[in-house]
Image 1 (cartoon, rainbow, N blue to C red):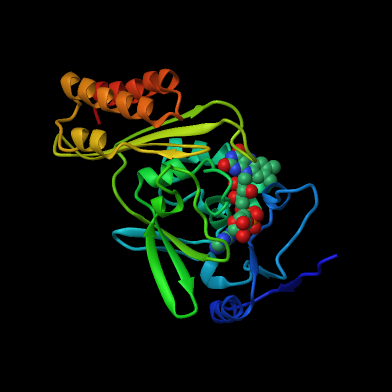
Image 2 (cartoon, protein in one colour):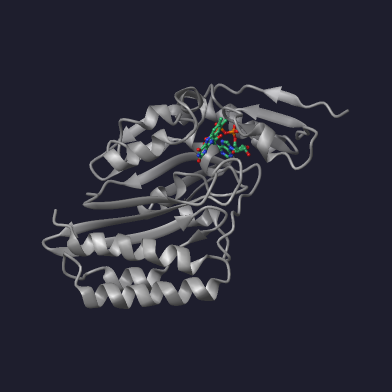
Length: 277
Ligand SMILES: Cc1cc2nc3c(=O)[nH]c(=O)nc-3n(C[C@H](O)[C@H](O)[C@H](O)COP(=O)(O)OP(=O)(O)OC[C@H]3O[C@@H](n4cnc5c(N)ncnc54)[C@H](O)[C@@H]3O)c2cc1C
């Protein structure tokens, strides 16, 4: 039987020292995924387990004029009243995760670093251009959320890498479309979320993203570019041209069910064509 030593650092500095000096470390926030991330029927842990919930810097929320930043150990419930979850549809999405008891302990860091698949909030945060701050003893790096996906769109999580903060640029969400596809999202299954968000500035679509995330993550940059800078509401010919681009890339992917997804993408774009903020 392997024994693991559990550490409870109280400061970020203590945590950094531990991550620098311990050979193999398992980071634990609320531990709600523990039974699910194990590959076998038996629980096995790294020689060192680090519990990160006692570190105040990892649980703080900062807001500036341009950005909101959550500590990775903020619980899902703590995010309920801040951007982007103050937006009705985003809050409803948050509320689909587990129960309030789960959301009171489950952290946003654990949600993003799950590693087996992309969980419910991933597509929304990708649409909003979330950036992730990772810290090591001597280095801080900031990566776009797509850093968590490889070139095939599969989760690419480096174990032992500490996520410290999630930053989201504050921008007006003038249009938001969220649809769930398939079955279960957690712990695994064929479920996914399709999320599309747009910002409108002086009757032009100044930002547009459409992300699908479940077992893999998908986005078509060229189709998004086709829509960005288009007049608002979206003209039908641009809608059709973007839809063709989505159809082509989904079919080429050999993974996504294009026949299922294209009507949803069409619905997302059609809403953008007909809506009027
Ligand atoms: C009953 C139940 C129902 C659920 N339903 C849903 C659902 O409907 N939809 C959905 O999307 N999710 C669902 N979840 C999953 C939930 O979102 C995650 O369990 C939770 O967010 C994980 O957070 P945690 O703090 O418990 O992470 P942990 O379990 O502690 O950690 C998860 C993983 O992330 C790593 N990790 C955690 N924090 C960090 C960090 N700061 N830096 C680096 N690595 C880190 C850990 O090492 C581990 O590998 C459900 C969970 C439960 C228990």
